[in-house]
Length: 421
Length: 104
Image (cartoon, chains in turn blue, cyan):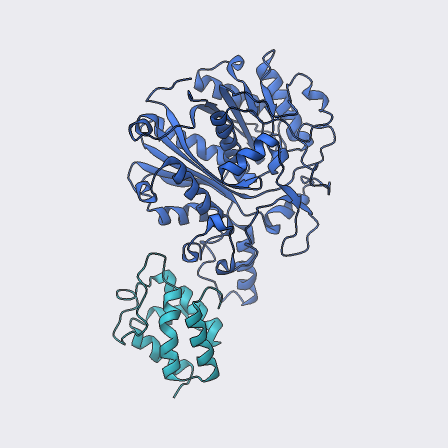
């Protein structure tokens, strides 16, 4: 499809994920349904044995100067000295997004360029600093205790690092944080408030982040990395955690076209709705998800029959998958877009997940494929009317829906469109 | 000393083996350099006593706080942040450390 100069284009993507550091590796993993989940050996012994691990990074030390990175993600250690681990991942993801968009870091420092981030902060660094502070009799507070730990840590660091002078803030809405950041960034451009927005979401993946979910019974107890994350399957028993970072560069299409940048996809619309039901459980019929997706379709002026593919939130939990399956069945009726949840490959990225999965949709739209549903053996009975392809489809989608849900019943849906090739 | 330059680590080892004003003076430029933000010009290997920590050497209040914290770890005495904020020049920093470390 073609697009108008008034639309919002995505012109750069950057990835540090369990299925790849960089777009090329991510794309290959999505096409081949190659999983990033493996046995997990964090720095302390924990009862959680598998995760969507990051490859080539060692951020186990509390001293960022001791962190190591893959060869293609080398950064000046002075840049990350007061950052949490996910700040390091974000820096690497941003570097790739800017390269793809053919934009220099200096060009981000402009009144019309903003930065929206999604992050839950760093429970790892917070735990470390508060433990040390308590052990010192509350007398010896590390000067980086706040800026390396709290929920705003990501945008504090990145705004300073890149000299951001436009709109800037952080989003914390549990597992829909990344999608909220993307939606509001999209609005900033289409409302004419900003010309360009950098959107970043990141998670540490640490024992402090992951293990508390075991206390809620939310994590899979399966110890086989190959099948532990099984969205929509009858045998699923919880999610597998992951971390990393994703950066997307959004631009007013007119601006992107003027400077000769190649749009990877167009954002057509978004919607959100809250369940108002339970602190951690979705509304069982998926009412909020249905409302959010309906709102997104209305915003994009699209009908359900125009949607070819869905990257579902489906985290591989019984309650979450079922609610979403019911919502999608109700939304699409006789239309049968290809539905899959890429969490089967990556694990669940928590505050990162919404933006990471949006970026997967953009890559799939740009390259012309639809990832299949990995690890699906026996679909849950409520999935009877959904088209869940087990293999990747070698055809492009025109319109891709991405869903994201979080604690408190927050639900966000985005619609992306393919650009003409 | 993870993250310090090899030269600074060597200077620290020399100071720990033989604490003296001369070895402290040789150590501190690298110590300061470690705490500077990326993009800040590195200080010279030899710093004059009149050099201002903030204006001339590029430290900021956060870096000064971090440096105070690191001095506690390295030298083994308690440093109050407000004490460091009262130090404005390289010479005053050396004098403060000389007194704390009871160097002759």
